[in-house]
Length: 68
Image (tube, rainbow, N blue to C red; front, top):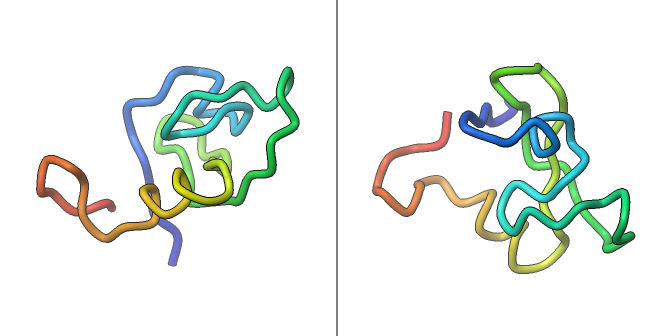
């Protein structure tokens, strides 16, 4: 089951930028990994490999809620 994310910029929601640090993958070829689906677009979204991926794949958000 994929995690669905909300509240992203258009570039993040299209999978072209990190959902955590906003790194633009079109201008920076940093490695990334898929982390779920954007609610607004249905597109696969990505996080930078390493720390951003670890944050994006936790079961709770910083506010204490759960990722859907």
